[in-house]
Length: 65
Image (cartoon, rainbow, N blue to C red; front, side):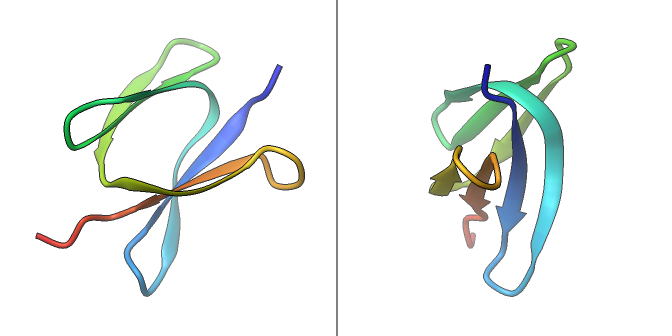
């Protein structure tokens, strides 16, 4: 099982949005995140990087509106 930590990157800093994420679903302008315990959160942005080997992390680039 792969459990990831999701970070939001605004180009200047990276902040943790959610940990223990087991499901990530692409939506129109962002991603629905679901944790191991079923907690859900939606964040806007685009996928920047995924590292399941070392950091178990997903980086979402915050869109500039």
